[in-house]
Image 1 (cartoon, rainbow, N blue to C red):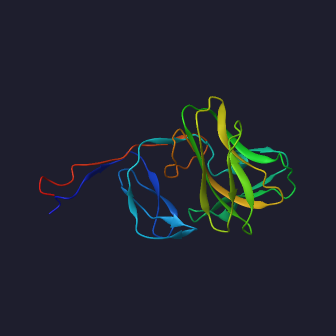
Image 2 (tube, rainbow, N blue to C red; image 1 turned 135 degrees about the vertical axis):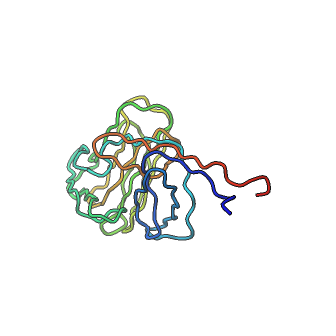
Image 3 (cartoon, rainbow, N blue to C red; image 1 turned 90 degrees about the vertical axis):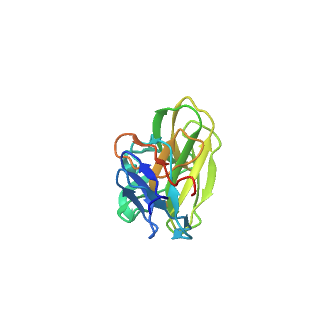
Length: 213
């Protein structure tokens, strides 16, 4: 009868994980069924994404040739099949690096809680590195597998030039794609960028049902 239908709205595109486990962009006004991804494989049924507005402040989320290098690290772009199914992920070669080497991207001064996320996998598995902020201590020490995983690091307020920092992966080769920095205390769905920040619009779903349903 259509009584249970709701009115969905979102201006602009947004990403989801599809039933094949790949990140894809859906068109403006199209709702998103997002599949759970565990260790690189779809596990279970999808859920309906309904997110607030969010901005990715990392201006080059996939082009690591635009990121900065500290110490001795070699970046080679477009070498690996990424989580979106195309050959646009990068190789980060730390084999000649020292303990202070790293790859990082600044995003300017940010306010409030900050969430950083990035898709990583190892060339052979077992590689370790630190995911943190260029101007903060602490961070998250992570271990990679040979499957893509989205890693995150969430911190409290910072008022200086914020960003993402990958460091201390001495002797390792890792693969990277999809860096994201948000002014949130949680990580939202991936927002691709290419040269500027990008904002995903908020979504609404209203007017479903009647008094009996």
